Image (tube, rainbow, N blue to C red; front, side, top):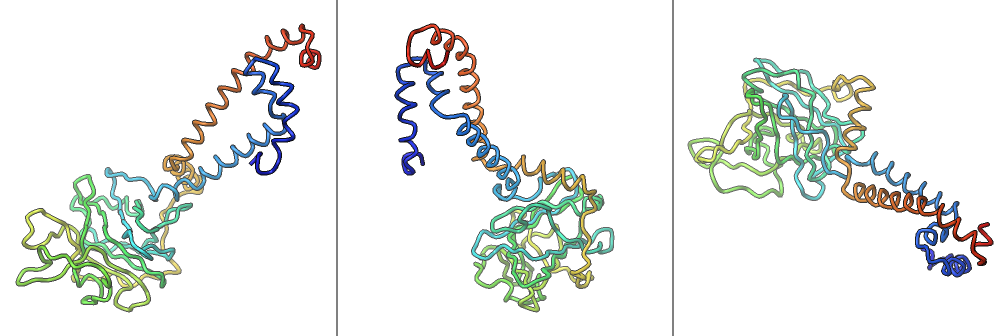
Amino acid sequence: VCFENGLFTAQKNRFRKLSNNHNTFSFLRHLFTKSQRALATSMLAFIVCVSLLAGQCLSGDCGDQNTSIPQMTIHVYDGDNAGTDDKIAASIYVDGAWTPWYRLDHSGCDNFDQGMTNYFDEFADYNSASGWEAIALYNCDTDGLEIDAVGYWNGADSTSVIDFFCFNVAGPFEEDCFTDLDELPQGSCYSGGSSAYYDAVWIDQNNAGCQGIQFYTGKTLVDDDSGTFVAKYFYSSSPGSPSCSNLLLDEKTEFAAMKELFVGSIANVHWSVYAGCLLALLVFVVYKMCQSQRSGAYKTLAAQDTEYGALRA
């Protein structure tokens, strides 16, 4: 930047005067003016602060994984237009009843971005020993969300993950919700013949059959010995459609929400910020070394009959 803007020319005289001084620390210390050093420090502080605030979004995840509490995990398919900024609502079927609809949201984070893993604690109080029997998800708007994995509380002090979705979890029997996704050949959803399942599912208001999905937890593929979990349509009951303008939020105090944002941002900060902080620390150490060398150097220079020494004196 200095070269391109011709600013280095303004430093030539300072450089020439200082080049006669063989003390490296003093040379570095006086090559730039105090105002230039202050500007550089301010710019560094600004970059670090902005990066910390944006840390969660740069990290690719929202929330923190905690397998010791009931937690819902949603992983967004890593494909074009898979993410969304819409309101996503969730309800779970536990102990024979559906819970209220909660909005899945992390303050200060770009929830449901493409390829992102989202960890939600909205259902942390529903820690039934039998686990969650079913899950319902609903998209309140028309910006579709493509989901390729859902984690849920299994009742055994941990989380299990559903990786595939049967053809009838949305609708039911609404195959348009699986458009442009590869059908997987091995195994099947139900016995008595081949039945398709998919790697991901859309929820979107643009299609009446894809607005939401509801499915069992803990179900596995037929004719598959690996125990792969698959989402199968939950037919026993339905939570109904949520009131999207009146969704419940995780009840956090204002202080707790701010703490979550700040701590989460620091924990998930981008690697480049760590590198920047290490570089800043190195510069600071060198600067302190300059200061420790300066006093003795000034006394020596002031005693010498040189242009630089007389100037400092």
